[in-house]
Length: 344
Image (cartoon, rainbow, N blue to C red; front, side):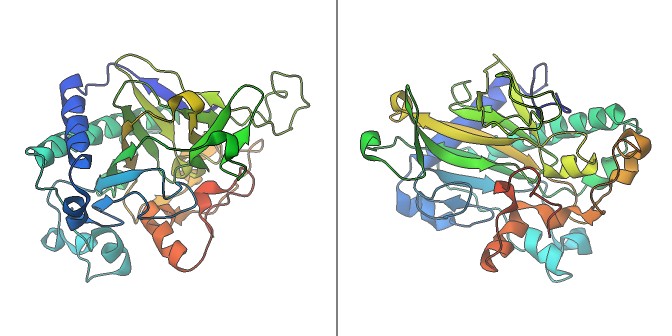
């Protein structure tokens, strides 16, 4: 799965259904609050973003509202210079703001902190498995993720009131059988891994675009190396959590593992649905060095020469992209394979 598509479902993951339901219910309850109340904790990094509140290259501004938090273990300046916003620009970027917690619904913070910790534990387990799969010691990543800068995000996709027959812009692609609206544009994640849970248990329009190059062409008989946009619906597995690899893991493995483009779509029959998902965007320590040389010949060899120089993980994050947005630089999440370089 890691080598071919970069998406997989985990079961027996240790995260109880009750814990996930509590976090999801808390998010649903918060999004139901009046806008003026939600705006009290507005923030692009750690807090609330309303519908229309943040236009970017990945998510059209009118398609969702969002709440996010970062570390819940109380780290701050007294924990050391790594967390001290006055010590360095990197520390200021990731720890210059505290989490903004809603006052309502009751129990929101407790439910989210419990779910965040459960995701931390699961992500650490997965990273140990990844290390073993790459021929390293199981604890290889521990010192690289022990001060991680991960955000937990709730995304609500409200019902869409659109006249699809009248749409002729780039957000709608007219096919032979149905019209598709992209709620989230094709992109990759800048993470090591991303863990997703869905309120209904269904992926809700999430699709992936596997890179078929090197597989002898696509199923339709196209020549090898041809790029064919054949989007695949992500299946639902009862009790499962969806995991996808991000760009950091792709670079760490010298492209041996995939960070696959994906998107969220709405079809004619799903426009009226109100969807909610929880997403754990796992990132290493912001100063962790991402170097494919860590895994030696397993990923760098004569058949697979080194493609990327080593770099610090923090150069590739969502927060770093906010800075790039201010400078008018492109969002690297939206670049296609082959142009999505290390991050310069």
